[in-house]
Length: 351
Image (cartoon, rainbow, N blue to C red; front, top):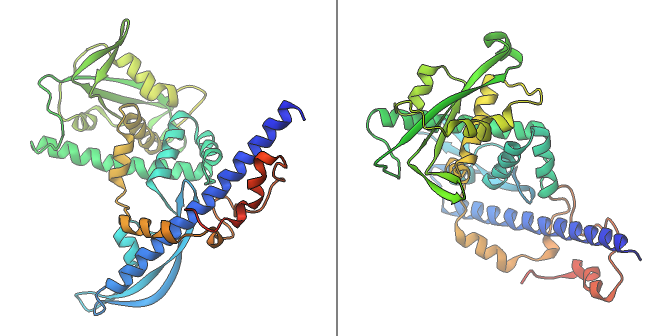
């Protein structure tokens, strides 16, 4: 057997184990959510919420699509009317079916910030247990970008009223602004012309030396938008325009490298939403911001309970990309070193 044949079989082995683990992870997630839903059912105010049975829904995670059931309730409102609610959805801070977890959303955003929507979707599909389309990646970016916009506007309004909620206080603050012209498409092209300037502002409190003749800005924040100069100034909290000399490289690094060239064209809203996420990524604030946008949390005790009772025999028939973890795409290696793999489906417990 050649070295290349061995390498190919090892790749198959790695993929098969990855699919198996993703299937287990989806089942763990499902059980944790359904146990939490059962607790909410038992602890609810029965005079207000009438249980109307379970309904199917799904959460898209890095392990795959987790399908589970949660109870729907008929609620008596103060005005005498009735409405249907899902207590689990309210407890997790989510709405609707096909919800993307914050971890998967971050994976998508990071991939799209580095590549096209098509390339980003392909990378996520290859590196996780979830298969997504370029359109799904686009929708995630638009949703998160719009929510970041709301945060920016709220922060600017608070700062204008001297009610800023920042965590850092700088004795000296530097701010620079510049712009880059990007091609437009569709209705945006009809309304604004062939291209439009995207404005970028950065603020920082200094710089530290990272190598010979190399410096890195400290506590940097960035903001980018297609807005006119007047509205854009409101987002930068009224700071003065100053020429410090760091903008040229930042314009390319944050915006130009991803959004200009290669015949790329943007709608105003689509470009704005991606630019907001690019600013967060290159100022190392993407993870924290996405976490703040998603209030989905599961009480720790439910995950602990699931670990102790979960068995491999309860893995659903179809999870993630449609693999159950036990259907072989190829035979396991027959060498003594891999004999354990042939009986992997008989494992009775993860512990």
